[in-house]
Image (cartoon, rainbow, N blue to C red):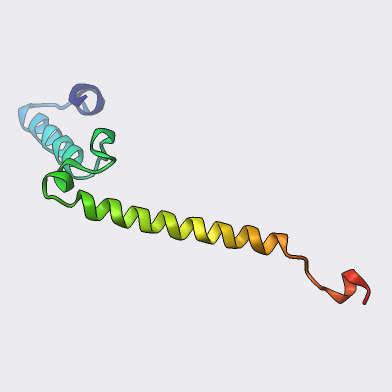
Length: 88
């Protein structure tokens, strides 16, 4: 919450400092912090309609990572024909 994450840790000295701390928290909350209820997207991105594009990009990166892991596992399974090891 605002009080726990921003006001108490920063302990503003005066009203102007308090306003600065609150504005900074709101900026972070709306534009940087990912919200699980919104599918791990910021409220600003969600309200701007960027959620489908963000989700599609994430899925592409996940699929690329899955394929890279599958290729790495496959490479580990294939025997190497090193003449020194096989004594050919």
